Image 1: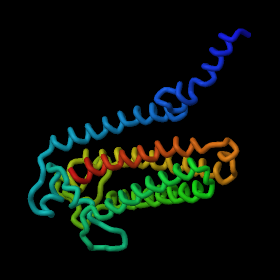
Image 2: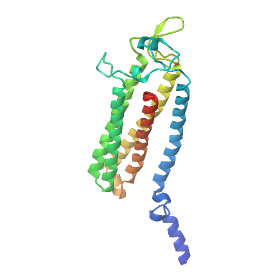
Image 3: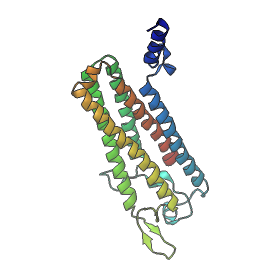
Image 4: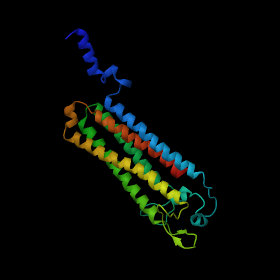
Length: 249
């Protein structure tokens, strides 16, 4: 084999390692960035749709009872999401949602620590922080399940149909809190995000198991932790936008 052929062959083998790698990223991390970019378009479309429908309805500025019974005005988030588990009757606007957000953000912090431990080839550190990340994701999902349950069952005020009858809670066709679009968007957007969190928890558990059995240590690096870390940070960042659009606007 000629020297020229050897050089070409080496370039082919090393195209994803070191200085020749696009943006100095491995093939796996670059593909993860492509996936996250495409996923960002999906969430952007959903949030733009929510904003368009949200501002096509007038905002309510009157009493709580009149607001609950009205199907014309867009719900006020702090009037809808004001309950806290085990504290019946306590009106705490957006407190529980804030707790959920804090838990998810803290899970992103533990993921950063897991990536840092992986860079130091600290297997025990990776195991510890990955486990805490998984726990944070599961707690967030549990909180979201409770929030869905409360939203579906409704409040003591109930909602009024055109014939004067009262119904409670929300589903895809009726919504005591306001227009039916509000419930449909709530279920779809938060559910879509919840599916991403669930997927992240499953993936994190798989990588955690591979760490425990020593598979990543045998490979010689913990780059896989960085890849799943990118996904987890993306999920956390998306929730910040969902929280802002759905609960604050």
